[in-house]
Length: 370
Picture 1: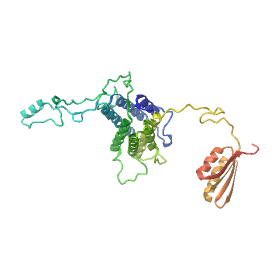
Picture 2: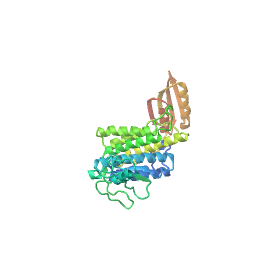
Picture 3: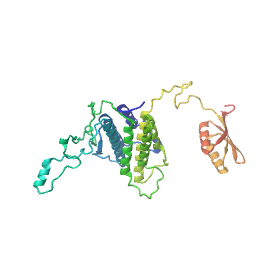
Picture 4: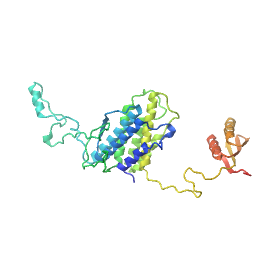
């Protein structure tokens, strides 16, 4: 069973960094160099969040491209959600009354009174160390050269790091930590992208923020029901392929939205691929062919089928079949058209026929004498 640990995170972002296997080729989206840098940064943030509960703040150096900046925003918030959940579960979460606030000492009050001002009282518990309250926890770092700030707590136990600064101790996080990260990422993306379009502008498809929110909500519902990480990741990834229109938009803002949505989708699909159980090795067929291979020889095929359609659709199908066949005959009766085709490309003929409507009485045989 998959768990959210360092090996899974490395597989997850390894899928994203593999330039030879694009995750969303049909939508024309492959990460740019700047987006790959953001993904590498996000990988380290998530690793730190799991290993030592580091909660990243806003990036010091925003990415140079609009969609890369949105991805950076999403990944920082995702890592913050994971790290915050880890800190809470480990009992090392910062005190909300003291974290990231300057301590107020009674010497400050004395100076204020000496200057003629009203006594300044500490607010929300600041400066009350004598009462046993924890002092504010200072930020930890995410390795040298990173573009990230961090706000959070170290783990309750020490974490070893390798030469590159990445945690060696794998650690692990529950599925709820991932859910918290997905929800936090969606909220950050909504704040960043939500003001781009006027409210009255109709949307033909979900926005990047809406896709991210739906992924978080779906993940939360499954986690509450006790689903494992693989099931949660699979359902979240399913939101990435819903409602896409054909074609890349030309407007600059629409293109940024399009790319951002695609990048979030790729992130979710990669998580699904990294968390599912490994598939058994492919066994070759008896002819020796493996996946996608064909060892047989082409043959002259005789294909017959019936299709019900209007005459204009029939004529269009005939015209499309002509370049694929040596002969096309059609007999029509009461709106039913019986096709008889001789071809050496039977697969393409059948695909084209099914794209035109429902087929009946489909038969495929070798042409006599071939």
